[in-house]
Image 1 (cartoon, helix red, strand yellow):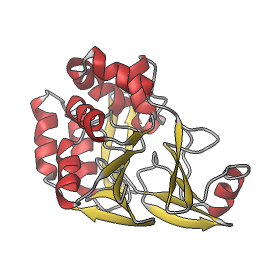
Image 2: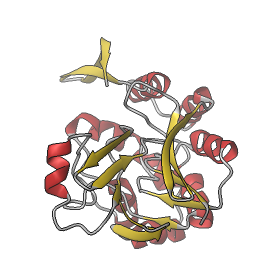
Image 3: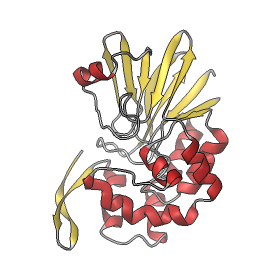
Image 4: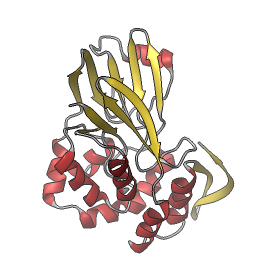
Length: 250
């Protein structure tokens, strides 16, 4: 493994996934989970990973569709997950579901003298816990973890921090960035050196694909805004459902 792509949170966005694969020569693919959820092409992304991923771990949305359980996403995003779930239900085969259900919760890999741990969320809670670039909180997480580099996803926030003698890296989200930069985010490990990257992709192709599946407002409007801006629109919840506000937050 000389040059590996590290991909997380594809969320059914084939246009973003294809843009990264085309932009970055590689001989291996490492997936940190959440191939599924929210996006218009979950089956195509699942099959891409089945064919190409050297190593993959399970995300909460992968478990949801593979094992037919709730994804336990935040209340803020639960309604969007429910609104887009019929897209995946219609597309996935039983073979796809078995693949998603079979993915491990974490994996270790030795590369160029360093020990890497790959997990979707955190070592303590591999599927569901949100933890951003908080060094003090990560210090607690890493207690007893035998790894030089811990590589995580789930938050859709790209970061690289040092915690004691270890390094914690989040490549960000391929298909649904939430850090104010809508470009597809990923990492590369080349000859033992890990670096963070972004690449532009045809966002409108993904928006149009959501529309073609019959996704209606307000879900379509909110997801389109998130894809175009890389920011989560603020909303207020009323008896008629989520309502958009003018401002946005990351």
